[in-house]
Length: 390
Ligand SMILES: *Cc1c(COP(=O)(O)O)cnc(C)c1O
Image (cartoon, rainbow, N blue to C red; front, side, top):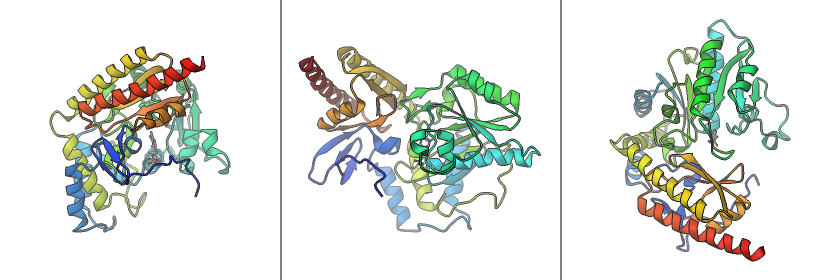
């Protein structure tokens, strides 16, 4: 179906931070398949792990124990606030699972009237029918029938969240950094305030870490920066390093309603995706991995800020944390994307007239230097053009 406005570009292979077309053109990939290929393309450890598993066994279903799944669940639990994990195939599906988990928690706690979820303006939670209601973007909802009941979207503030709480509210759901709407961070104070609201009003706090999770911000999970812990998080994008996989992590208490038969999936948690997830964690849990991400991403941010100072007619703002960054442009972001693509460099468009720069977490410093060089070349051409026009 014609659901995508695709760029006329196709790639044949990848290596680290680079993608190659069939005719041999090389692109610096600071889009990472929308924050998915967290360890770059063709990472030797991931390739080896998935190839070896592919020769042994692909799929058995959740009718049987899956040791590779138990292992990934245990490792995610050991490295987070959570006690329990459920695996699925995508971000939207992970968010659906998170919301089901929260509603079931209240149902088995004798409070079935608590089912409503508060979400925030600018959110993106996915494209399933319920997540369209959670996202509440008219552009995505239009033409798809009645909006799913039970989601109350409020202005992006603590005050608005507080005002929206009713006896029917079950949970507050938020992205620690809104990704699709242009890299808007939830201030730490607001996140702490939301945690407090949840505690005071008997609500669960759900963090959508589909984009921010798995090291994107320089820690394994973005909530770690805030000092608070959520009750439930959703993961996907970077979790499989390019292999489709999602997860819901929760405390034992929040997951107490998720008993046998309450939720399920045919593909979710299958051996191939769990092998990919474990291989990703092998790399990320190496000592010093996140220090490296923080160090190289700070350097990149510093260089971007300098670029903004040199090209004020082109770049209005740079923002983000870790390798989840965006430049807000003075010209249309699509023009900036095209100019950058002419320099054989890729980013991903986002809201608020931004272009996301989300390289692999493993991007070496020399590729960052090269990225800045290409960004600078694009900025120079755009600035010359705007001067010529003026
Ligand atoms: C991408 C994304 C989703 C949706 O993930 P899909 O795998 O496309 O369903 C949900 N939430 C956030 C924050 C995302 O960035």
